[in-house]
Image 1 (spheres, rainbow, N blue to C red):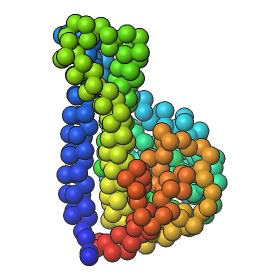
Image 2: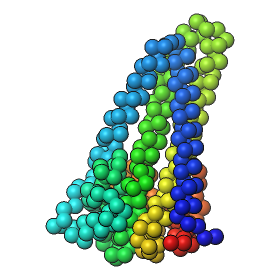
Image 3: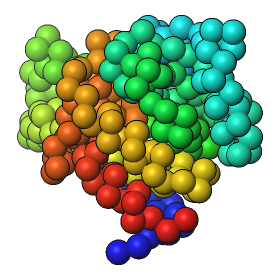
Image 4: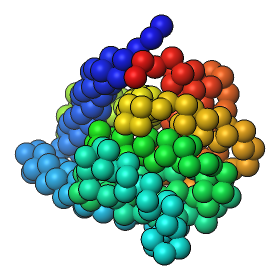
Length: 301
């Protein structure tokens, strides 16, 4: 079935709003239970509110620097990488956004990612393996995909998802450590059955919430990859370039050394080769390359 870019954008926006809403509900439940179990009262709510604000601000302004540092990326000068910089500049013009900063990752696996909180503060990093394996049309396709992530504010959305997910896991750890150091008995002594119920609910959330967070974050990432594929193809009016690039990436059998589970969702393809299967699982951060190529070749431009 043929799909237009606007069909994909509409579905992606609806899903993202739903996912962030569910994330927020989970975070609220975890915080509410935590404050009630340990009887922190109004002061507890104020503390966590302020903590969340400052936590968000720090990650919002530094997530791009952290991603580049974790990936061991270094600046790609126009003198050393003239073709790469030229392609990034021409695709940025087509996208109507400022040229992002360009970085290189010394890794033989063909891969790339974009980072930055908005189009004015964005970077694109590609591996040496990608440059050596792709022709100009394929490299344009990859850059257009990453430029679409920037233009669609995907990185900001994924940062928000990571922030909320990190807070939920942090709150879970505080809860479990509090119980370990005697918080459970104090809560039960003070509140009787109500305290016991909160403890039970808290333990259940401590187990379930991180799993739900990972599932939702992975689902957001998969949807964003599909949309960036379509948006990139729309920018160049040439889906075959990106489709061919993804096919080459899928044929590479190695794994990326300059990547971790924390940054895997950023890359155009899973750096550990987990998207080479024909069927995606619920925990996958990327849809199968096979399905992405199929969608690209069925897209109406």
